[in-house]
Length: 191
Picture (spheres, rainbow, N blue to C red):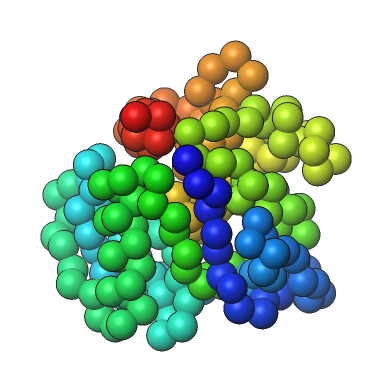
């Protein structure tokens, strides 16, 4: 399966007030900048495990949230929202689809390092929290916390990070619907 390629535009990472550039697997920098969690969704699309709520600006993906299947769908409110929906739906249909979206995120220096490391995990493969921690010089617990703070799951594949002897958590949960979503995503990429 192919490697995830993200944001081919010049970017920056905002962490504790300082700005630094980072590279992705496509040798492209990524911007990390924040959005307000109270911001309205620009689209809500169906997924095999419920719905996905999309937050974006006119130029960048800002956030993805896993929502209940009971939430009403919302058609894309902009061209960017339409493109994000198109790419996410293509991935949900074909796990080898390469998502290529510009995005902006806000994170600490450590979160940016973890999110960057997750981008390098190919579809269909996993890394343990400990392996990722060793790679970036951190602890497994801190990596898990950064995974749980990922505002663009699926695009930054936090579902590919697992426990040393099990599934681990997902979306800051250790059981329930969140782990069912993680199981579905991992199985989808292994088909």
